[in-house]
Image (cartoon, rainbow, N blue to C red; front, side):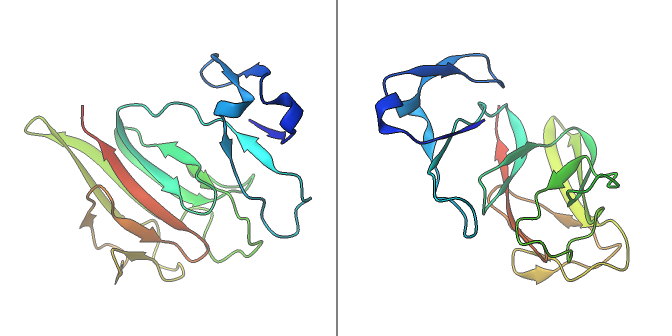
Length: 160
């Protein structure tokens, strides 16, 4: 949820639509607006992160929780089949609507995460600085940086 920043509202509170808790405006995260957006300072409260793994969109701070099994990531679009749809703030369409797969499974009581490209013909994508190729599965570790053509993601694991 975002609201326009108003210093007179800092002692007031609002209910978060995600976690249903009340927060004072002064407790919310202040975010610098992006170019070509009205110059009002938005204030954002992010829902609490759940245990497991997630990706964080570096430019917006958006957090997407991963599920066990197949997680398809891609550019946000009404036609996308991706479970996780990354906002396209730059307006370019270099990231495919279905671009990357992160597979989460449990082995020997421990969660494992691997990734590959969703299809052969996508723009270059890098994990930890190395180019990812179609059909090549790579293990993901907490803190790994995933560079999509239009966005950078941070993969994080919360150990239970």
